[in-house]
Image (cartoon, rainbow, N blue to C red):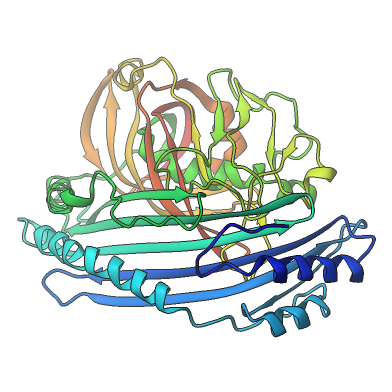
Length: 471
């Protein structure tokens, strides 16, 4: 077994081969024995107005050894990247794991973190200053998050795979005091995310930057101006009515209310509203949903998942029919339609789970303005705010941060304070038109306490009817 990968997550090939032999000798009947190594450094910069930004640098480094038993059980343990500790960990795996503390990091990791900080500290501060200075803004904040992650996976079924992923995200939040009858504070949030992935050696090029990297000032000003122009919003309508949701606004609904129910582990344990519906129609024929970790620049992209499987695009719902689930080595044998290649973990201290990457509806043939023109009355949703989404049942109650009344096929006055209620399966079945536009946005997804970077969204959609509660 030859390892060509280098970097702070790499182990010598002889040690890797020895650990694999030890695991197999101790568990001769196991379905899978695996070694995962990781090194990561994260930089977080928070700037508020003209205040001095807060900066946090954190790093982690270690390994996870895992055995999948034929009966379905999992034995595992984690360790620092120390030969003696790794050999010890290989002989004492258990069903609950034996987490190690991990290493503090290496000089290479520290240098990478400092380079990321230097590249983004001033940009983050600039965005905060620019947004705070705009007329009508009561407060603003800008958050930058940068993650550089090296990882390798070794199993008996495939040679060692390795990759380095750089994920960058910048969020601008602006608040303006409401001036209309509703008098509700207006919050406008703009979030950009991008990733660079390399699986060729230890290649790490921090000179790569997203297209928006040098436009943060302009983005911050535009975000603030949108907040200031929305202060005359009125109270929202209520009742069941047609709703047009702009592409980026539907990110959370598709991801949380629908996507988690398509993850194989949720289905296998009976917690998904889509259980038992493989091969059946779950939406109108205009609806196709994909999960694509190969998407160039996608915030949730990767070349290999955390079980070492080559990334590939998975069509989950095709023309309204449920045709696949996101799976991993543990769940795929137990669920028809489950695809391997979707195993992700937040760190070496956790086991991999089936997780989304970049999940979205594919665009359709209908223009957003034609959806609006087709309605006698309804609600147009430009942005969603906070709310409650049960990712297992798909039930949701979500605030409309910014919307407009639809009257006689045209957009009317701005509204705020509305709340949308429903469920993911109901939402899919109620989609009657899919837009030709496409809006994707980055996010951070939590599942069983494990937080990962993802991207979601889709085109604008026309929902035949939704429950709208006004305030």
